[in-house]
Figure 1 (cartoon, rainbow, N blue to C red):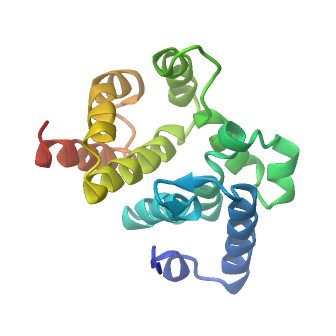
Figure 2: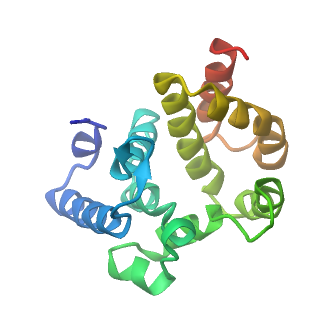
Length: 185
């Protein structure tokens, strides 16, 4: 399945494109054999990047953080390895800013993680790109159970991470709210 997430047009220089694709290749290899529904995990990574590009977020460190946002959680990837695959300090900070803390339940993990997201610059934007990609996939694949899980978390997520002064995240919050409104329970 081919998917154009707009990243090629979003990165103006050849060296940025090369750096992005190197990091993408490494992220795909680190997620090897991991699935996102019926698809290889790169399907999800490409959609998270696509959400960022769609909302005009095209700086290279942020796009790379979209590729690596699940690596520490899913693959136990350490910071030094993220650096080796091309993640700068800013990208690594974002990635670890959205990585779930330990906890017995999802609710407990989120309760520990949301304050970290709130306190890390741009981490809310990264988490929103991930959440929008997940919710859009739930809608596309008609996965009502997952959609309702995200809907149930939305009020707490918004309460913990929404900041009125965060202009970058504002259109993402609006879009996510619109997705839930357009797909009632």
